[in-house]
Image 1 (cartoon, one colour):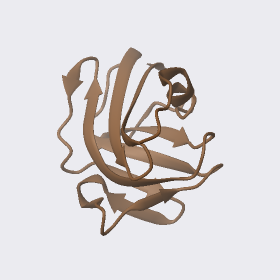
Image 2 (cartoon, rainbow, N blue to C red; image 1 turned 60 degrees about the vertical axis):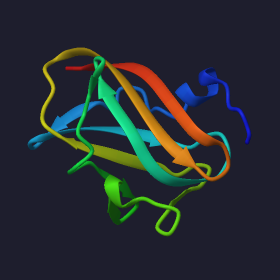
Image 3 (spheres, rainbow, N blue to C red; image 1 turned 180 degrees about the vertical axis):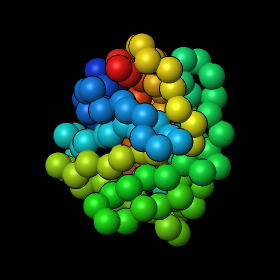
Image 4 (cartoon, rainbow, N blue to C red; image 1 turned 135 degrees about the vertical axis):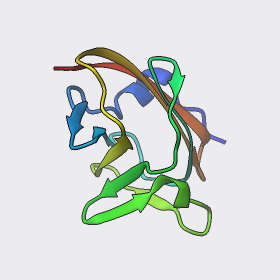
Length: 120
């Protein structure tokens, strides 16, 4: 498996993309590393608290996929330059939040992106 340094993984996160929309919070990831195949979302935490993955969706272009539905048989191809929006049920209060998301990929195994972003 390929090892990707955490400093590169942080570049996947689109700065200032954290927002409350309707009854959810959203943030974006944009691939600037290499095309990859996401086969699962195994963890999502905000401010150190795990988020339930039920109801989490990933919007890629016009496709909206349930995060729980990602698998080897139903992967998400994350091409270089493409952007996805992750939507999580529940709103967040204003202020800075630590976000940690772990995805499973065919090419590199588990990848964890840890960032902080400001919600105004």
